[in-house]
Image 1 (cartoon, rainbow, N blue to C red):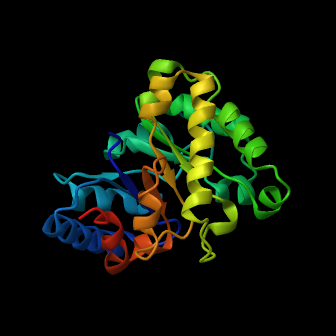
Image 2 (image 1 turned 120 degrees about the horizontal axis):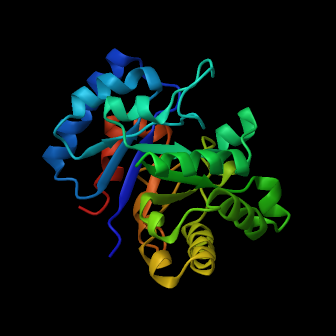
Length: 252
């Protein structure tokens, strides 16, 4: 059985003081509710230390929303994996659609980060997903195939235990639109089948695939009831304990 993995991507929200207060509130609420899922929050870089401190000793993972593709050097404004690890961060989100579309991150560039993260002993949430035009143009499988083969290039079979895939249809992110549970599950099934072709059935069966795209308290149960949906990468709803708690306790 694949344990549900619920993650909150805070994006460019939460100052260090606000993030610490929120993390303490979330921790208390999750512990009181007896949340029985793998949990993660991804604050902005500057907020990470305060959140790590607030969540120390809890079972909530603190991740980074991004990282550099180099270990050190003259890369102004970048953050190296060793810097994150020194803060207590061992998980990183890579290939988010906003990084791809706003900052031009390509599959090969993302792949370099994936390989570096694994080399540095970190876990990766690799994001893939299509635009509305690509879906309506019948290119869903082509897009997912390209992003998966590009993003996972040279990742060894024994390293796949460090990889989580987040399927996020770009048209459903922050729009209030959500793929139907059936459409989402079909995409997840394709991802799992493609990974099986790249690797083997055991790796595909154990792979955690999250759904990301306007997940909320109203749709999480229906999404999580599907065979191939193992979790959620939550954006806006993860910024409120009142909205996030029903998601992380969907199975209670």
